[in-house]
Every structure is written in structure tokens, then in C-alpha cells.
Length: 146
Image (cartoon, rainbow, N blue to C red):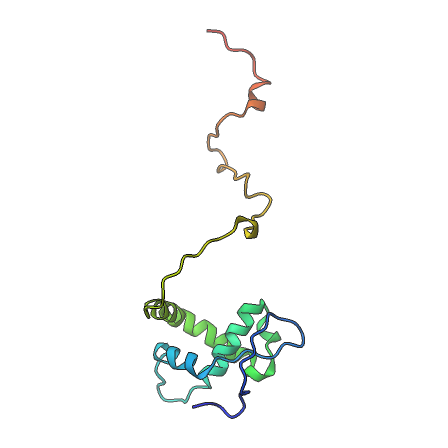
């Protein structure tokens, strides 16, 4: 069942002010639907709209209030993200999709894409803990007599 307000195409872009909103396809929603919590009483909003909005926000690093209007109120997106995260919906989705038996792939990470903060190489010991002596520290010490 497709919402009438959804576009026919599924544009996928990498951000920018003129970007078209991201929409999950019918096939993608069919695969994800079993992982959503059951509705009890009050009818829920369109899961496709909310999940597409959550993906759009997370993928583009936006604040909730910067979500395009097509996804609905920012509070609805945040509440969906928070509640589904607390209930483990996203974890179940990832586990379920990973166990679907897709082809195995080898993933390689090129170190040129890894970034670390400039202090990451100088991890400090906890305050008061013993640390190994450095050569520069030993040069100021008196010579040892045996």
C-alpha cells in the first residue's frame, strides 16, 4: 500500500539544499514491515514516511528540526527514532536483514579514510597511575650508582 503523497521515483542523493527527499521503495518496506512493533489501539502514522525521514536525517547529519516537511513534524520523527531505538526495532532490522542470506562480501577499509583526533595517539594514563619512563625524562635524572 503506497501513500498517495509519495513520489513515483526513489531519488538517492548525498545532501544539499536542493536535494529531493529520500523514500523507501515498496520492496524495501515489505522487507522491513515484520520488524515494526504492532499497533495497539491508536492508529500509527505512516511508517514509510517516518523511517524515510529518520534515514534522511541520519544520513545527512541534520538536526530533527531541519527535516523536510514531506516527512511530517520533526517531533514525530524524533519520537519514532527514540521509541524504536529503545524497543530494539533498528537492531532487529539489522539482524534480520543481515541473516536474509545475501551473498557474502569482503569489506576492506582503506586507512586513508580513517580519521582520528590529534590527541588519539597520546592516550594518557589515569591520573596517579605509573607510566613508563620516557628517554627525555631520564636525561634529567642523576646517574645511578650501583
